[in-house]
Length: 387
Ligand SMILES: Cc1ncc(COP(=O)(O)O)c(C=O)c1O
Image 1 (cartoon, rainbow, N blue to C red):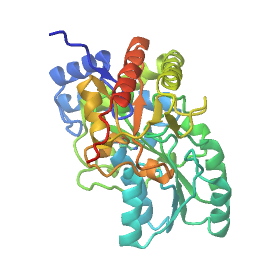
Image 2 (tube, helix red, strand yellow):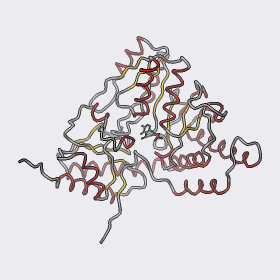
Image 3 (cartoon, protein in one colour):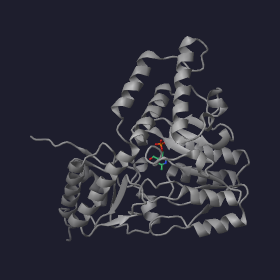
């Protein structure tokens, strides 16, 4: 029996590890097992690797090494920032959007319930953009001790905010600004020192690095304390023996991602545009969720499909046909709760949505084949059975 290769278009969930990243990680695993906190030669070697990686990352992100705190990923970085600014008493009000990732949403909900923090959800337009006039009014009332937390790019629908615009607004009113930049670090050139941003979160596995490692950007190194307590690692900001190979791998992945960033972007944009065109031709009833303009996240395309008799089965059917995509945020896939983002956009719950997300490792042939599979599955859906 002929088996066809599987097509992976779920890169917003996670990206394949770059083989060059795997190679540097393997070398560290094989040769450098010391604990960076040990003062002997083994430990000093590991410490050197961690600090060299921090320096590389700081140079690439346009910040100083002391502003980068390594974490276990984006979720921990978001949690660390939000929880510690509240705990330090710097923030009593958080302004955010209902379309944020659960790493932010569930954290602010808990901060509201357990710590009495006031939480304001900004209204959004039909493409998921937060209402900045509303934000300005909220800040005008009460800018002090307020944190604005808005993601740079939405992981499900690709709608983006302008970091400079939001950041200056926050700054004018004396508010802090945190952005979940998990989907954009490694894909856009961000220079933290030039942005009016106090905090940001990032994750290596979204840019062909390893899973379980990321970082929090803390402007001026000003953190409000650790989320995880224990040893004095990360200048007392994040206890626990450092994930040395993960950190080295993340720095290598960022270097590779940014060294040819413009070429990767051109390639991925052409994949997204091809998918858009082909879906319009082959599934004319389909619509798109979120922003699909050139200003949207170029790695993500979210499609609102025609009604499907058993929407829960759609992803399984696509998977059986060899196409791996996601029905929303992969982080909650399998929970059958549907997407809070698509719901917040007010889209029909009868119509399933699928997210196609692309990486530099995808090809045009894969995109063509993926849309053929999607059209076949959607159009050959079993008809509802009336008795
Ligand atoms: C926007 C956004 N924030 C946070 C996260 C969580 O990152 P991590 O998987 O590193 O915990 C994700 C992962 O899907 C994401 O897309």
